[in-house]
Length: 83
Image (cartoon, rainbow, N blue to C red; front, side):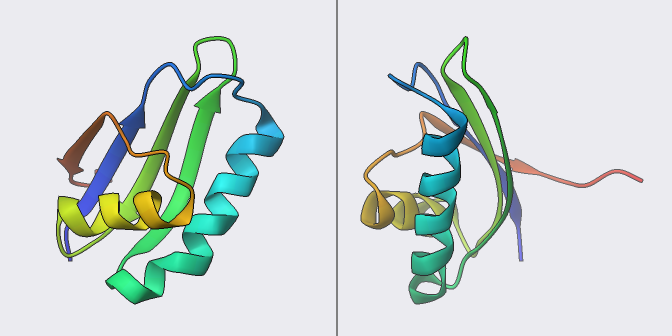
C-alpha cells in the first residue's frame, strides 16, 4: 500500500496536546477507510503538522482527517522510505 506524508500549514493554536488529540482521533477512525496513520511531527511555532500515513489513496487519507477532526491537510505527497 502506498505511503504518504501529509502536510498541515498554519494550524491555529497548535499545541503538543492538540496534535496528540488529533492523532488519537485519526487512529480511532482510520480502519473505516483502510488507512493506517503511523507517526506525526509538529512545530508549534510555525503551526505545521506532518503525518506519515499508509493508505490506498490520498483521498482515503484525507477522509480520515475530515471525519476524525476536520483538520484536512494542505498537501498530501506520496513518499518512499529510504534505508
